Structures are given as C-alpha cells and as structure tokens.
Amino acid sequence: MVDRPPIRYFDHAATSWPKPPVVTAAMVAALETASGNPGRGAHRLALEAERVIAAARSSLAGLLGVADERDLAFVPGCTYALNLVLKGLLAPGDRVVVSSVEHNAVTRPLAALATGGVNVVTVPADAEGHVDPDDVERAVAAERTAAVVCQHASNVSGVIQPVGDLADIAHEHGALMVVDGAQAAGHLDIDLAALGADAYVVPGHKGLLGPQGIGAVYLSPGCEPHGLVQGGGGRDSAAAAQVSERPDRYEAGTPNVPGIAGLGAAAELPRAEGPAIRAAERRLARRLHEAVAAMPAFRVLGPPVLEERVPVVTVVHATRAPDEIAFELERSAGIAVRAGLHCSPWTHQALGTFETGAVRLSVGWGLTDEDVDVVLESLAALGG
Picture 1 (spheres, rainbow, N blue to C red):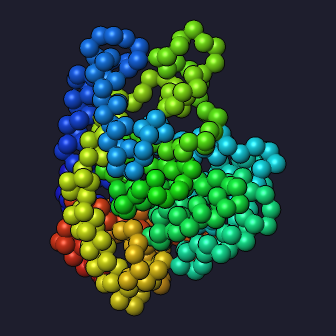
Picture 2: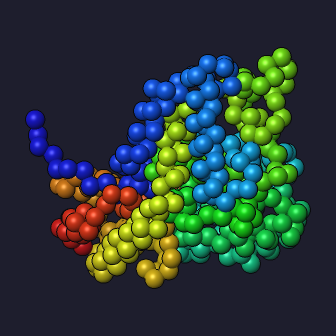
Picture 3: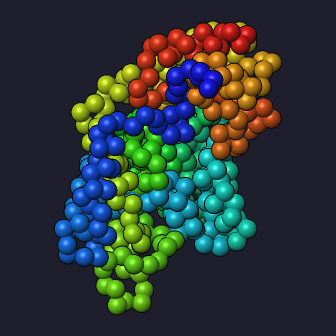
C-alpha cells in the first residue's frame, strides 16, 4: 500500500470536515433514542424525535435571530430551499433582479423559470465581485419587480454583499428580498430580524459545522411560496390538501431526524465557541491571503486582504492549470482544495477567470498555522 500524507483540509466552502464531536454524538443519540417518526405516533421513540426537532429548531432560530420558530423550516439543503423559494414565489410574467455573481443553486432554477416566462434581469458586479446597491436600485426601479436575489457571501471571491441595503431597496419598490446564505451562516453574525430578508437559506454542513443533507429556510411573515412537495406530515391525515400551517406545509414526508439533531447541536456551538472559531478562521485566511498575494506567479481573486470577507482564498497561477495545482497539492502534501468553476460560472465570468477556473483554499474549523505553513511551502514549490 502506498503511504499517503495526512489530509490537510482546505475545502470548507464545499463542506466542513471534520465535524465537531458534539455533532456526531447528537446524530448517534438520535439514531439510538429518537428513531420514531415524529408526529406519527405517541410512543417514546416518536415523541423523542419530536423533541429533538423542536429543540434544534429553537437553537437555530436563536442563532439566526428568528423571532417565531414556525418561520424556520428544515429542508435537505440550500439548493432545495432556493428551488422552493424561487419556484414557489415567481410566476410567468414576473420580473426578478439577480446579481451576476450567483451560485448555480440560484442561476439554474432561474434559468428554468425563464423558459416559462419569468423575466430575469442581471445586475453586473465589479471586477472584485462586489454588487453595487445603486445598480440594483436602478434595475428594480425601472419596472415592477417581484423579487431581488443575492448571495450574502461569495464562495469564490469571499466578498460579503450589502444584503441589508438591498433588502431596503427591494421593499421600497414592493419587491421581496431572497438571500442565499450558504457561505455566510457560521462565518458571519446573522440577525434575520434586523437584516430584512423575506427568504434566507442556510446549509447545515458548511460554516455551521453540521451534517450534510440538512439545512433550513427562513420565510418572513407574508412570504408564502407554494410548497414543492406534498405528502404526509403527521397532522390532519384525512385532508386531501397539504396542511397550510408553518412549518409543516414545507416539511412533508419523514424528516431527517439524525441530520436535524446534528444541526441543532452545531447551532449551539457559536454561543460558546463561535467568536473564537471565527477569529481563528479570519486570522488564518488573512495570513494565507497575504502570503499568496506576495507570490509573483499567483493572483488572489476578490477584494484586497484588508476588506472583511469570508475565509475563502481563491487563486490563479500565471502558467499552471488549477486542476494540476490541486492534484499536486493533494499528492505531495495531502492538501484538499477545490479547482474549477466552483458551481459558480457567473462569478468567474465577472472575475475574468471563466476560461481557466481557479484554485480555492477555504479555511474552517480545525485548521492550524502548521497547515497554512504546509500550504504556503507547497504553493511556493509549484513555482510561486
């Protein structure tokens, strides 16, 4: 067997790894003691499953500043949630304004809706990936608009967008504000009561450090997308139509109780350890950014190092292809990174890297200065 170096994991923007022990423990406990189907029985396993879900919803609502827990629905993830919101809110003839640096989880549902008569208007970002609120306001004011859609933070450039300002603009013109929080949750302090988003989606498995296959969508009072899925929910089984009460109307079928348990445990971490975790992430990402930016052969995408950003450092090399760099980093030092277009071709078009793609190094829980040292040494050895 070939000896391989230990994994140094710099792909947290894709999914976090490893998971904190409390997350794993909560999932195992749910499998052992909460394996009933919640809402479908009065026996102890079903009742314990209901308790686990209620506790997780309360923890996540507290973390995100959601006043009414019923406005927070558990979903399989951000992609599902964005499909739910966009397809459930927009109808043929509606107009939607969207930034030019969105993830495929936004752009592909909108492309499908466009074939059915939804008018999708794109507002360009600048060469660093910033969205200008003035450009958004001009686009929204030009014609009646149903919704504005924007990411909170970029998985490529690390840019944090002014989504609070965009929400104000949307509301001034009678539009809804839809925010993709995939790269923000767990990395930024989020207060949805203050932010003003009508819909905000979060994944469990990225910055929140929870498991894959579970996430949540916040829907403000009055934001009522049609459900994507209908089926059993444990309430009013005799009714022909799906129940209308929140969050049940958006949670048809057997829920992912172990995943919800893990997400609930993860949502408790920021209360005790969140500031320290985020400070460590920012420090390591900034150190990585500064050092790579000083290497003549590399260019770091996005804003300068002093601007606040999520812990993503995405680079291109003057002569070497991203997939070649990613392969060599893993082969020589066990460094796990992401190469390519990062499911966000619009962003790479805005940044001028659509033809080549880039290498993304994303920092997260568990990494150390030693890991960053190894990355920098390995990049320099590639001809930095």
